[in-house]
Image 1 (cartoon, rainbow, N blue to C red):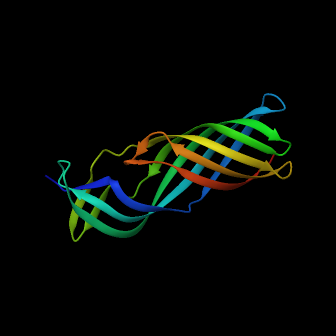
Image 2: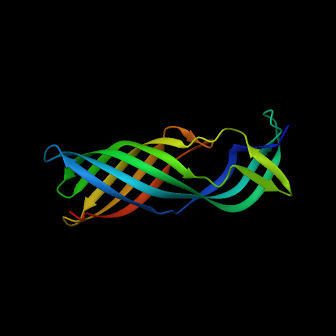
Image 3: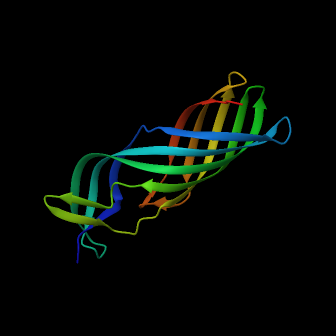
Length: 169
């Protein structure tokens, strides 16, 4: 029986990543609208350690690491927009994600290969909450928090984003 990496016992720190994408908006009234985005997202973590098991659910040790892992996603946030005051909007809605690449399907420590303890899941879903400040007709600044509703590789995909948006049209 192969030894298994226990992803749920992983120690890690979140790291900064970059998003790039396009968006469009629809207005229903002066105070309500919809914002749809397509984003490429680089989501990074710094791994400190993994728990190692025997493949039958029993832990047998810990592998200490010092590695940065980059997961790349294609994201589709669909956000309902509520105007709070003249230049400040609150947005809320679902975000669907597809994992494009993942660097951690197995781990090698001291020439021993440890496999993940579960199947790789490429689909993520989260709830997004955003505050957006429109400084000009074309330029906006915002902060977004997304809360993972399902697990991808034993972890909930949560994050905090700061952004600068520019409307071409």
